[in-house]
Amino acid sequence: MNGLLPVQLGRFLIIAGLALVMVGILFVAGAKLGFGGLGRLPGDIVLHRKNFQFYFPVVTCLVLSVALTLFLWIVSFLTRK
Image (cartoon, rainbow, N blue to C red):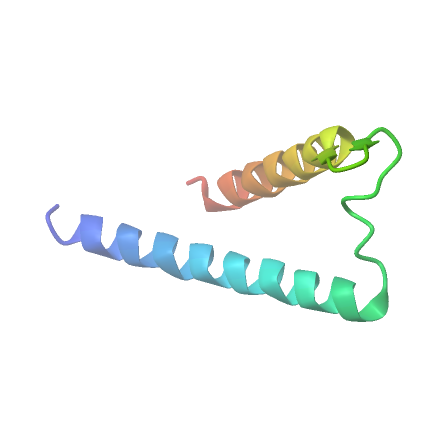
């Protein structure tokens, strides 16, 4: 049973690394192709004053939360034995 933990940890690190690479590619592609509007969605709070700017991406946080929840649910479902 001691040999099982390193194997599971190794698989988890590989999956997490691949997920980070995919997210990085999406960010780079989004910036270059112009669909990186994830931060300028309707509902995000932006306040502009004379010497002050405040930005809070409420809707963007909700969208990312739902996407991450779905992704983790799918990974959990596929790795279930």
